[in-house]
Image 1 (cartoon, helix red, strand yellow):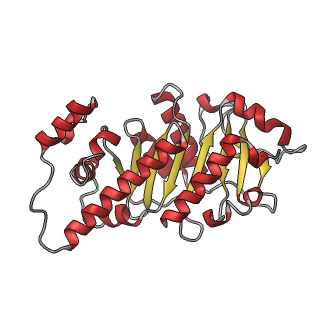
Image 2: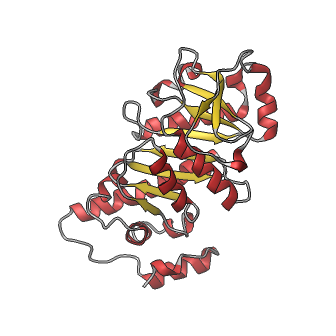
Length: 274
């Protein structure tokens, strides 16, 4: 038995590899964090470092994440290498009692730090934990090409992106009935983009980063990966339809969207409909 044999760690590693196989993680692009359940922390405890790393201030703070533990990808590390050498490319972080600092308690054995976008993840975990009464545990950031391409041609509003995605694939209003948020372009990795994204994630399960990528949240790896996958596939359909040069001739109408919502028992964000 090893740290990487623990069920939640295996699921985390698999999701990293799934994203790599989709082509969403060029070079060291993208990052994934997971907030452990108390029983999962106990499963990990026998494998933690005898001497944890020093505490590192994040520049952000969250009371509801004090003392929590997170699995995180490493800064500058490649998703393609996680399966082969998880101990060098991912880490387990402990948050201090003030909720403003982390320390490494497992992983990154050859040195390094958690993803530079951990402040964004951390604040989004805080917001989503509060919004879902603790259910949300996964924050996933990737660089799917088609949703990024859409940020160059559509107005950067949550309504415009949500409508385009809902109308591109029938399953979309079922998978993300609340829509998607959109963050205008900002320098990644700092407190400003972390705050802007977390404001949107109070309302949305997913947020598009203009000219950069997509943030998704969920209660487990399957649902979060599925949300990313669904949004990107809808974006691919939209991009392909527009590239045919004829414009959109017909699509799923707003009444059709309402009918889908009724049959599947979901509530659409009505202000995004005409």
